[in-house]
Structures are given as C-alpha cells and as structure tokens.
Image (cartoon, rainbow, N blue to C red):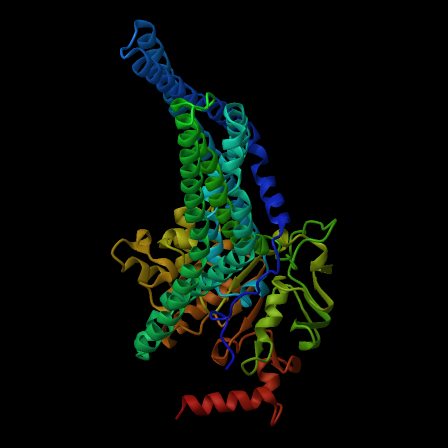
Length: 605
C-alpha cells in the first residue's frame, strides 16, 4: 500500500559530501576574527598545558632522589618541589581562564552562524512558490528551520575550535613524548591502527544511520503538526485511537532509528578508553621492569609524566572522534537544510523586470496553458478579456480550474505558455512585488494570525490608522460582531483564529482586503462560510468594495454573483460559456442554466 506524504521517507544521499561543509564555511566567514582569536588562545593554552606533566616529573624525581638517597628532604629540594607545584597550579589556572574566554568567543560564533543560516532559510521559504508547499508537509519544513538548525549549535560553537586545537595538541604531545622516551611513544602509537580500522568500519554505517534518524524525526514532526491542526476533525470522527496507533508507529520508528544511530556513536569512546588503559598499563609494566633492572633513563618521574602524556594523547583523539560523530550527524541535517535553501524559486522576477505602473484594471488571458505536473495540462488555451472596473465571476464544478485561473493572475504559478496581460503589460515582465502590491486576494480558508483583531485587519495596510481599520470593518459589516467581543478590536485571537467562527474570520479577511485598497480584487469562495443573513447585509458592502475595481469572484453560491459584469462557466480547464447572468439563463440546457436550476431547486426543497 502506498505511504502518505508524512510517512514517506525522504531520499537518502549516497555519500559523504564535503561540499556541505564548504557551504557551511561560507556562513562562518564573517566571524573569522573571533574564530581565529579562539583558536590562537586555545593553541597557546594547549602548549603551556603540556608543561604540567614535566613539572610533575620534576616533583616526583626530586622526592624520590631526596627520600631514597638521602632519607631526608633538603631545603633545595623543598624549594624545587614548591616551584614545580606552583608552576603546575599557575598553568592550570591560566588554562581555565583561557577556556572561559574561548567559550564566550565560540558561542558568539556558533550562535551567529545559526542566526544567519536560519534567517536565510526562512527568507528563502518566504519566496518559494505555492508548488513547493503543495508537495511537502509543513511539519517537515518546520523541523528543518527549528530542530535541524539547532542541532548544528554544538558543532559550530565548539566543534571547529576544539578540532583545530586538538590537532595542534597532538603535535605538541608527540613532541614532548618523543623528547622523553621514544620506546614509550612507539608503544602508545600501537593503538592507532586498531582505532583507524574501527573508524573505517563504522563511518558509512554511522552516517547512513543518522540520515535515517533525521528522516524518521521529520516524519514524526510532520504528523504532530498535522494532528494539531486537524484536532477538531480527529475528535469529530472519533479518530483518537487510530491516530494514536499511527503516532506510536512513527514515534517507535524515530526511537529505533535514534538508538541505532547512537549505537555507532558510542563505539569509538569505549574503544579509545580501552586502548588508553592498555597502552598505559603496558608502559607501566615495562617501565617498572626497566626501572627495577637499573636502567638509568627510566625514573619514577618519567613514568608519571609519560602516563600523563598518554592520557593527554588519547583525549584529543577522543574529542576528534566525538567531533566526527557530530560531523556525521550535522551532515545529515545540513543536507536537508541546504535542500530547502536550494529549492528553486520558479516564480521569480526575471532579469531586467520593471515596476508595474499604477494599475487601471484591464486584464487579458491570451492562449494560456498551465499544468501543475509535467504532461498533465490543467488549463487549455484560456482566452478572455476584462475591462477596468468590471467584475468577472467564475463558476463550474470542483476541480474545473477556477482557482488556478485566479492564482495565475497573481503569479503564484507561472504559465506554461501564453500571456496574462494587465493594462497591456505582460505580468512576467514586471516584479512580483510591484504586481501583488496592487492586488488583493481572499481565499476560502481565511488565515488569521495570532494577535489582536486590529492587527489582523491592519495586515492589509501597515500604515493605516485605527479609524481607517474601523471604517474598513464597517464597510464589510464586521464592526458589530467585533464590538460584541470582550475587548473589541483589541481582542486577542489565537493562531488561525480558533476563537472565531469561520464566517467571522472571513469578515475580518474582507476588512483586510478593503483596507489594502487593491486595484484588482480576487475573491476565491470568500463568502462560502458566511450565513445567508450576514450575506444579505454584506452585499451592499461588497458592491461598495467592488466599485471602481476589477474583480474576479469564484462562488458556488450563485446569489453572490448575479450582478457580475460577466460570468464564465469553466470545466475541465476550458471556458465553456461566458456572458451575463441574464444572457446565460436564456441558453436552454446551457451549463450555467442547468447549474442555476439545480441550485434553485435544491434551495426550494
């Protein structure tokens, strides 16, 4: 059985793509100064911290020499011990202060990069055409903007600096280890081939596991978002148990994918710890044997210092391994983030696009063809012309292409062929912003933003005064119901206007459109949720609103379009009839005539 869009996993990339990291480096660029300072001070900290085992070696050698050879501690020995002990303490304190400053710098870098990345992603999402959102569940888009970007925080805040610092640390440690004892150094390095083999074994499996985990998490987030938006339908049809079963399945998939991914993450840490313990033990066993054998080059201080360096040698390797884990996780998230950023803006201003002049209102479709999917044509050679100030109604069965026609006027989609002209100007030759600024669109699903009713109406014109907002509400008969609310125009409404009825939401949308004062107005089933009594009151306001504007009205309720200049009957992507209400009723057996008769008969049953 085919899976729905939420349950459908997104395609996995086949290999590790270094280009993702190169692109990420572009976002780090503005913070090069902070990053460079952090790296420099951490390298200095790493270098001076290498002195601590040397200080401890001097302390241990002084103690053993004075105690075992002289059976008492001389004043010179005490001074030497104190100097080395306080030197080690001073170095440790300096490293702690440097670490605090490094955390401040790296946090600034990490959060700055995340801010830029999220901003670019959000801005791009605002520009993407309707077709992008038609094909992708909104929850899967949201998880990229929030969760995936957040998960890059640690990588950017600490991973980069720690990795570079640890690479320098390894060099410093090897230099100190070789200067102390070459044989012990070679013993320590024996664990590297084992670690390399394990890394090669798990790296591809680990990366694929994190890709799968990001897919499962995306599916879960998408389903949660959809379930919250559709909670009324769920409860109305008593689908709670069924939805819970599906949620448990998706939640279980996410948990399983996560456990499988972290399983690979935690392979390297115990391997490195075991290698550290084994190599340290071997060094102690051999070192004690050589010490007991009287080998002059081996001392208690040397063994103590070298054991400290062995631990320090494997610690940056552990950090690098953890960074590698984070990197694989980040790559799986970056793939999805950059996938959204790279999504093509098919509906965009072409090069050299001009500014749309002040619109008068003439609209013409010339041989327009359109398809949502390649090879499936929705509109076939649409031709019509609307004069400025005229109102054109579009009727027809569901799926006939009515909404598609009006969406093309606003350039929410590009036509496959043909032209759409406004005042004789091809709308593809002007900027989208200058075109849409002079148009108003009201859809069947009237979206209400969280905030006050005043803010929602003013969304149509941010510069409008309170008096203008109230006047717009009065025009569309929304003033009375608004004033009946507890706080009137300052009443807070939740996202999507859940405290308001569908009809009230549409009246607010009407007021928003009136306030925008568009030259071309599109009403796509805008009165479908308004009761008959309110519709009668609204008719006068509608006529006032349509006066002097070119308007396109899609309506199944024919009473709202009887006074339109022209009515077009559309079916299967073609205009089958066109004329005024009276003209179309004079066509016996015509499409509009039959539609009117069936609706009139239904209303009189």
